[in-house]
Length: 351
Image (cartoon, rainbow, N blue to C red; front, side, top):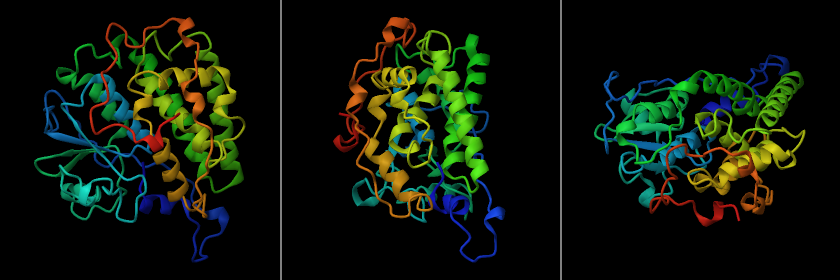
């Protein structure tokens, strides 16, 4: 997720009056600047190693939430420690103000930008999460949100818990990749294209593509419990992180308001099914999500007023998706309890 200094570049109007509205740049998502991989063979100089790396996330960020869920499902908590940032950034980037002394207790830094600068001095780009930092050197290793979770599933296997599911099964990878590409273009990124649009036609194009894709996904999921095969895969994780935020922020804040997710019987059942699955809902912090979007995107919400709704009580209601069959974890087992200290605070939980 982009930090304030990057978001301002793509969302705020030109206050100097040097550009007309027609000339304003539309939102574009930057690719990862640091795309090194942590692999079993250490091909990029970063071998998989228990205790060496620290995963930095914001619970507000859908891209970081992928890593949180994957880490839980695969049981990587003992091998890969976790740092959770404040949901509100400032011009210096993601802050560790949730920790004692306003510093991450392991990395010893106050801002994630310090790990970026340790990797590349005076790095000028955006500081994004998820990020993995090398603890001994304090340097950022990767911020490649698209590749990171795939490597968790395929490169970190020696450190997976007993009973970990196969989130990227080889026999289904082509189909998973195809589904994920459509989800990324029209849903994951599509809500941002609509929300940060500078022109009516750009907004309308993104809006239509988003709901056309959601309609196709709803039709697909009407007769199958999960997106690909009969188990949870990476494709479900990637769709879930946008859907779980849909009614809370995207429907109103980003003007993705043809209908609420809770008004689509299939998708509402699907996302509740995943939410109630260990490893999904126990990583979601609605307080962080709402405060981040409504505070940080001042060009979209200049008052910074955070809405009280929507009602979160529906997340625990029966979904009935078991009737479609499926085996959530395949031949594996559910993850254990959330590790002490990593629980979502009461203020952010669905009731």
